Image (cartoon, rainbow, N blue to C red; front, side, top):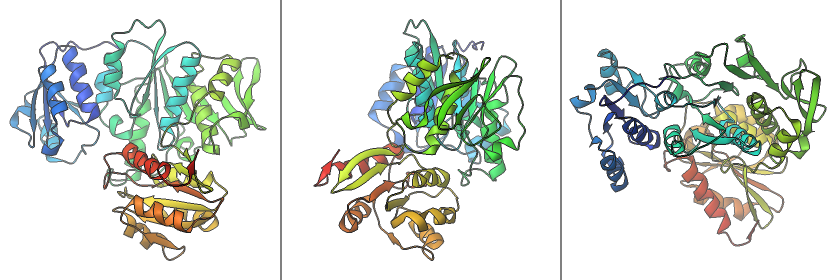
Amino acid sequence: MEALNLNNKKVTILGSQRSAMGAARLLSHFGAKILVSELDADQFTAEKRHVLADIGAEFEFGYHSEDVMDCEFVVVSPGIPENVDIIQKLRAKGIPIYSEIEVTSWFIDAPCIAVTGSNGKTTTVNLIDHLLTTAGYDSYLGGNVGVAASEVLLDSLNDKAEKPIFVLEVSSFQLDNIDRFKPDVGVILNLTPDHLDRYPSLSAYYESKLGMLKNLDEHSVAVLNQDDEELMKRDIHFERTRFFAVNSQTGADAMLAEGILGIMKTEGWTPIMPAKALPLPGKHNLSNALAAVAAVLEYIDDPAVLAQGLMTFSAVPHRIEYIGKVNGVRCYNDSKATNIASAEVAISSFNQPLWLILGGKDKGGDFTQLLPLLEEKARGVLLVGAAAELIESQLGHSIPVKVFETIDEAVDHCFDHSEDGDVLLLSPACASFDQFQGYEARGDHFRSLVTKREGWSK
């Protein structure tokens, strides 16, 4: 993609979180004059001041001045919704607004694999990254996965990589403000309800996810989940489309057949490895693995290399992450489960009696859809955070629930009442921002509570 000439062009960055600061550094590197404008004064830190001073950026914290409008375009942080006053003012003046993923893509001069979907994104991009690395590529992983795409790109500019490929996890919020963003491989894992506190309708949220595909052309590859009814009913067709499937009987480019993960090659069905050899629990991870395989078929088609990559992959923190046992109770950190569908997947992964910690900042979902699983599996449902009373109102009439102020109290209650062979699962089905800075902080706190407990062992 042809990069823009930004030399001495004025650019406003709205917000000061990870991706905003990354965009400021990247655009400054390419000659832009940066203004970072952050409404929340509490976000101002010595570290941010040092970074902004180092790149010669102007900045304002605690307000948005009229200087915000004096720019060629605006880069908006994904946490800033469309309906806030400053966005409406910018729209009224016709000032272009882009996401950090969009502006980063202007400067990527290498193949790019981008992954979106309601659930499974982080595990899938890490699988893709590991497969590419196993095959000898120089893989650069970033986006919504923990390191901003702009930071990854900026760091890569100092490398002399022979076989670079960028792997990006992309959220719906990042796709809301794209213009030219066109990955070489665009992956949509699934479409399930999420972020109903942000979008006016479920349809609007789905359309945001489908924005991943809007710029794909005859040189691009779309990778789609053939098992996802919502995705398949949209009848998406591109000149180059690959499908992956765990349940489908109609065949796919990467699929599960009779307990074997395999791919379709010109010579026919080719096995990779037994599904039971994948070092990740749950049927959902078979789907994630097949999505990763379908995504890298442009670059790796050797089944032995694919098998080596899949079999040597380590679980990603905060995604059904095994922490250890406390007096016979196995503990799992699934803090990344920030919506109901993701928690449903995690609950389905266990057959043992389950203690489930739910709650946090509600995103507008219907928790009653968890009832069939919880009635079957749950020994106790422990509710925490701002959404606790809401969840209690939806579940409490059918199953026993107990409300706590904090995760600490919920963990204590579990260990006081659990039995050898039980499972403790943090899979909140909510965002973390009521009590934590992000799902990582929530998961780290939970891990600390478990590992410091008397009787803990790996």
